[in-house]
Amino acid sequence: MKKVLFATLFVMGLAVVGGVKVQAQSKIGYISVDELIGTMPEAKKADTTIEKYKEDLAKSQEDIRSEFQTKLAAYQKDSASMTQAKKDLATKELSDLYNRFQNYGQEAQQLLSLKNQEVYGPIQKKALAAVQDVAKENGYTYVIVKENLIVMPPSDDLLPLVKKKLGIN
Image (cartoon, rainbow, N blue to C red; front, side):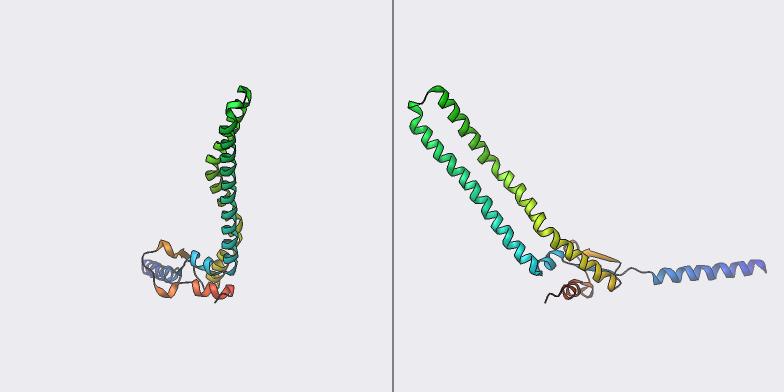
């Protein structure tokens, strides 16, 4: 009798645990963060800021190149009448300016990367906070970046819900 009672309770326990597992299934959604950020009004202003910054960097590089060419032309014109000390000083100055021009591309890339982080960082934070809010409000356990998926159901795209939350049409 005790064995039958124990077996019955054991089976009932398994049924309860199995039922809990069925109810605790995860709800998964996806979103294109790039598309979301691209539709945000702040992103358009950020794009303009970054383009202006790129133009400024290109102008600075052009200014360095122009300065180098001007000083090189002056050196070539006046080198015959210069003392050796002046030639050495002018050669060093030209060499430093040329190296500065050569390294400017890499420096500009680093500066642009920092500017991107500065300008787009708050926009990305706002977008991700909205995604998290929408996921929580709608019971999504996981939200995956759309670009990383090959197959996805159309009903779990969170982009329309997040755009609505942010007031974007």
